[in-house]
Length: 138
Image 1 (tube, rainbow, N blue to C red):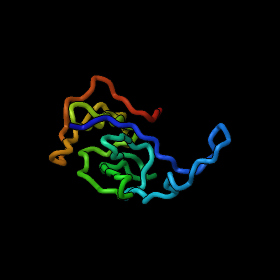
Image 2: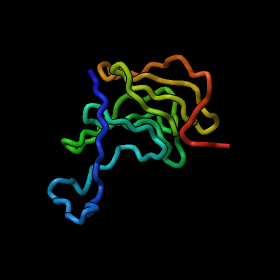
Image 3: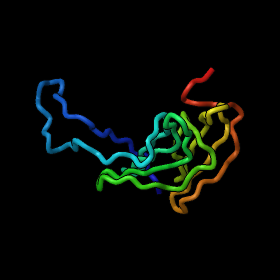
């Protein structure tokens, strides 16, 4: 069973507000880069893994999904969605990941897809009644 787990990954070394130095050995100072360059992607942390799907690289709306395992500092490419989307929502419910809405470069989307981590497959599900994206276009 998947558990929703939100983690803060510290990307830089800083001083705590009370002036005490944070021990450098407790934090990683660099990470392996994602396999697919992207912005405006959906991001979700589940069971200590980070999932990133969709997004935009400046010319292409991605169908890709990657999973990051911070314990071994490794990105893994997973199955592609059927629709390239940026600004989509990514949530977990009933042990499934859902990528909802977004923007395909021409239209705001009302479509949604469900990812089953056990089979590694995406399935189109019923569309929302309203087109939505986390990125606003006029």
